[in-house]
Amino acid sequence: MWQVLADLVLAAHAAYVLFVVGGQALIVIGWVWGWEWTRHLMFRLLHLAAIVLVMLEAWLGVHCPLTVLENLLRLKTGSTAYADSFINHWLHWMIFYNAPEWVFTLIYTVFTMLVVLTWLVYPPRGKLK
Image 1: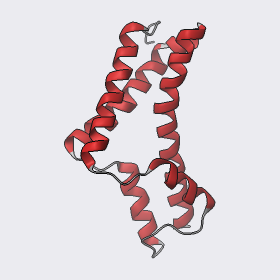
Image 2: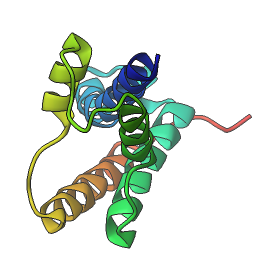
Image 3: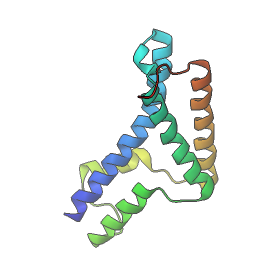
């Protein structure tokens, strides 16, 4: 059961990464192609908040709560390394890399600046209800 929960947390983590990276790609594509939904205020606020959270965690040296939770669940299985799960293997490979922390902080900061720049030159439309 712990293995399944850990895999679900990993899948949620991958979905978060996809939302941040894929969301930015869709916003830029939507700008070029004139897709109005990419200007939806709530979508853009959630997208901005998602990357700002990641950047602030990096600046403050806080470990990602999803990573911490996944590691705790994996320890409950009695393993310290990833098991044979397909989801586990490929999702882990896609979102975790070995590099110094400052590299990730720089990447997150530059990506956040890109999102803010996109917000300024292709602003969202609408009102919060």
